[in-house]
Amino acid sequence: MRAVSKTYYYASLLNLLDYLDERFGRDGRTEDLTEIITLRRAVLKLTPSGHQGRFVSLVNLSNRLHERFRRAGTPADLEETIILRRDALQCAPPTSSDRCISLLHLANCLCAKYTRLSVEAELTEAVTHVCAALRLCPPEHYVSCRNCLANCVELKTRKWRVPAPTSSNVEKVVRNIIAETTKTLPLRLLSTRTGVLCNRDAQLSYFEGSAEYDELLSSSVRDGPEFEEPIRKAVFKFFRYTILSHRWGCSEPLLRDIERKNIYTLEGGEGIAKLQNFCIITLQHDYAWTWSDTCCIDKDSSSELQEAIVSMFC
Image (cartoon, rainbow, N blue to C red; front, side):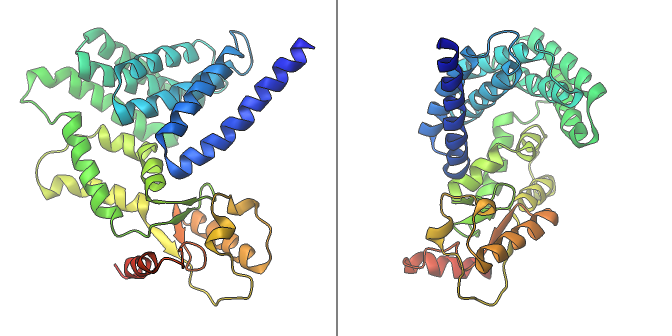
């Protein structure tokens, strides 16, 4: 009876986490992130050494702690992330791609710690891990691994050269360009990758959790527009979106019909089917976002309606 109760508790935690993860991805609220971390710790306790789900539990908890570290900069979160990612590597990741990503994520955390404390051993370990990741990496992870190694070497040789820009300066440049780019975006966009309607904060949260954002922060940026242009192109590519051009039907989905829902799982007739097909076509063309005048505007708000109209012509 006790084993059944434990299994039920474990399944309940995972179901609740699925809901919170989706809401956090949509709204980006700090209180949701804190609750997710608490529940992920509980799941980890239920997956001891040897449990088939331990690797995934370690990775999920470490990813959320790293997300909180990037937001708040708390050293304890970074230290715990490093410990968990080391533990994950000891769990024999299921595929070579999983091991590659685990090595890369650990190396990035060690680099972050080195920039704060300048402990040479941390940087040496980071170089070892990212070199191992490069030997394993599939094509889709090559650029991330290469940039991480370049960042490690740049940190290692910095003391022998004219001081390069700090990571905080790079982040400032990136954030300024993000703010400049997103101010012309609609207040709400549909994520073609998740099927969820996202407000501005959630859009930014998606970007800050992306590989593209990590790569930009690991790059070296000097003063001048020619050095900022690659960042502008990367930010624009991530946030570019399509607009559904269509003839209105009699069953078009409105904001209230899709808000806090996944459009890919909805059933609702011709209007929903049209929106779903449009999102898939957009995704197939490598656009992460799309906008429709039927459901991405709060038509009861005149100011929002006006802002949406202006953004279409920016």
